[in-house]
Length: 121
Image (cartoon, rainbow, N blue to C red; front, side):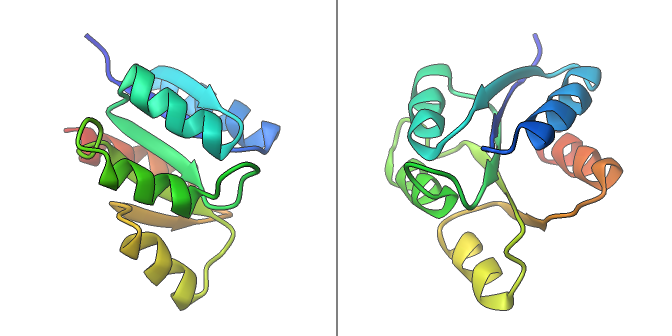
């Protein structure tokens, strides 16, 4: 059985490239284009891991992360924040919201795939 990975990002190019990489790794890929859809998808589909953009319409990735951590049903979901916001305060905010990892854009796709593989191992 393959793991479900949710890609929550509002940038179509990033969604396409991440979807391709995750499918190539053998994961079932789910996509959400805004924060509200991301949270609904996490609660409904229970993905093993979420690649979560910090800045999305509806709800920010930070808000989604906090909501997931506050929900006993999905609290164990692994979350990797993917964001262009790379200042120390942003990283601290992401990790403080409960993200398991924080990756700044632009990122190495090879490194990201390795991180996902390690987190799901």
